Amino acid sequence: SKECLEKVTQTISFLAQPRESHLLLLTGEVQRDRAAELLGLRACNFRPRHSSKLGNEFQVFTNYDAGERLGGWEQEQ
Image 1 (cartoon, helix red, strand yellow):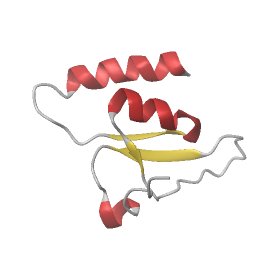
Image 2 (image 1 turned 180 degrees about the horizontal axis):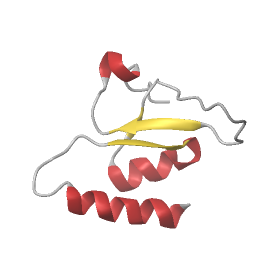
Image 3 (image 1 turned 60 degrees about the vertical axis):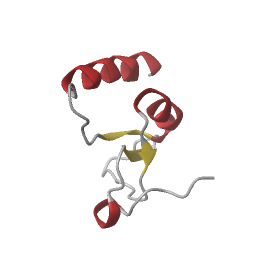
Image 4 (image 1 turned 180 degrees about the vertical axis):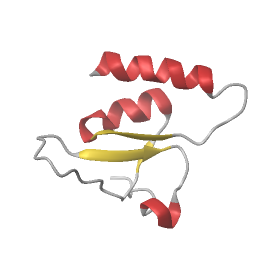
């Protein structure tokens, strides 16, 4: 939910101080816009999968180019 990601953002901002940190967020793809807006994260090409048949797709977002490990960032659309 929007509220949940906003609270996570507050916690991350507190923990990442005073230096810049590499952030990695694994959450539902529906959070794409919020992850970008609140944390400055971009989606990676890597697509995590889960064994249960959940209805939402997961996505990895980072504030750094994870390169080969996570397939780099998706191309901007």
